[in-house]
Image (tube, rainbow, N blue to C red; front, side, top):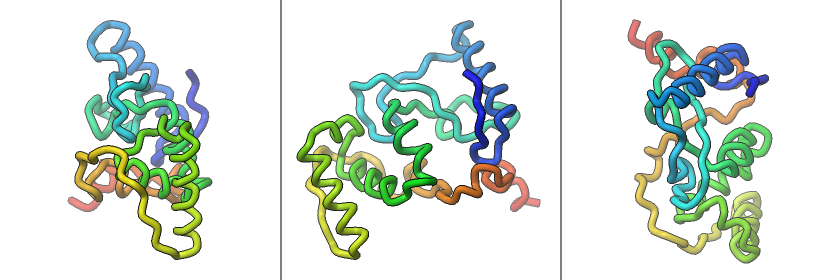
Length: 169
């Protein structure tokens, strides 16, 4: 896989280099292949793939730098948050009510989430039905404070380790 876009201030070359190392470590058995549950929606019964939030050296192979996300969360929600932030915020509300990405295949759940998103757009309070217990502390999840601005893709300050280092100096 050739990575062709910037993310969190990391160039396509930096991202591709870490991806190649990841694949090599998995092949050699030094690192496990991605395993569920999904680190975003918490679905325990879905195939997951690796997602990196940090491509800096030395490489980090643990959460929250390296996560396991289902394809829907990874490709349809997380990476599309820049172009559709309202959809991202509605999806996070869905996750926090115990919702899985796969639940959105259910027409009534999808309709309820669409109604929620419309209510938010109209500044109307709408409470989503709880689907399952949510075990994470709201606001402390890895995704709670990620940047939403498109500029963060190429902004070196989006590199959290670099920003922490600068603040300590």
